[in-house]
Amino acid sequence: MASQPAHTHLVKTLYRQIIKLQLHWIIDLTRWRGEALATRRLFESSRDLKDPNEIAAKVKEAQHWLKEHWHPEPYAIPTQQGGSSYQRNVAPPIECLSPLPLDLTNLAPPTAASNPSQ
Image (tube, rainbow, N blue to C red; front, side):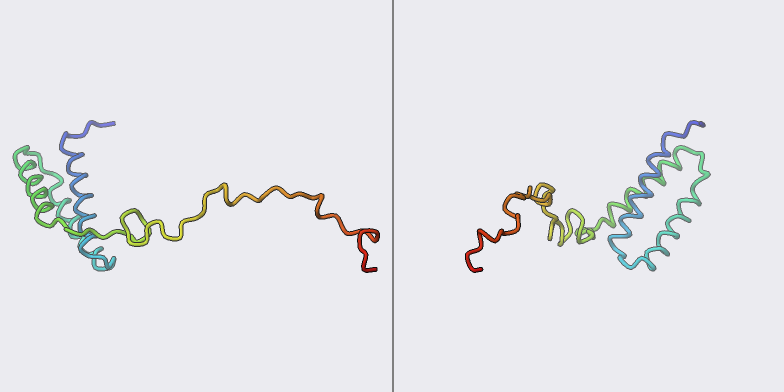
């Protein structure tokens, strides 16, 4: 396995953060996909940079973009933690779902001697 430059992990993390941030601003996936592709093209255009100063400048620019476009109220899927429907209609605990033990002695059919109406 080839060793990767030290900035590779940082760039991947920045890319992922930018894509997720765009999802907070653009909830419509069709429109978001276009923005994600444009972001990908932007990152791909800088892929072959070798100069550490130029790479550091691009990373700083991406970090600045993240700070400028931070969403004050990020979108949360309603049923996930932080969403408006989180833990509504929660399934009961497993011990409540197990059947109760049956007492079969009370289920015996009545006998003629015990039934006085006949």
